[in-house]
Length: 155
Image: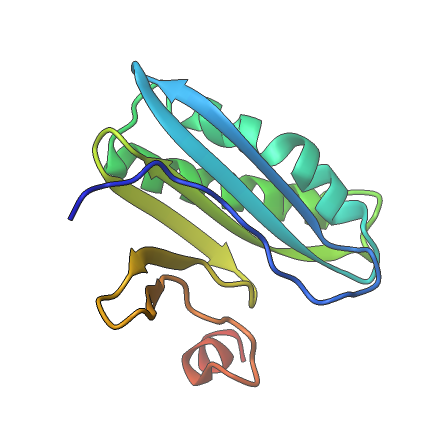
């Protein structure tokens, strides 16, 4: 398997204008990473806009210039906890959002992803010999109607 440069794409149905997306390339510890963040706004766009403006920068600072998978996983957890608390305490309390973050380290050939909500990350590996596309869904849907474990955890 030859690791190809990463690309991002977003597919979303037309909604109420509450969703946001941001992508950036950064360098951590001398290694290039591709970062992508998809935000699924609910009851307004305030929370999604705040996360779009600040969440990836907070994530990068939380990595402390360490591009290892363990550091990226830790930064995902810290970032999600921070923004969850921040949104709960914010003035736009009627607004919320789901978030899906992926960090791709092309040099080490891995990716780390985290999500809360029902957005999905799909890794597309390229063409199969039969002409189809090889893909794998990397995230779990946290929607209550779809996920019995999530429903049991919260209720």
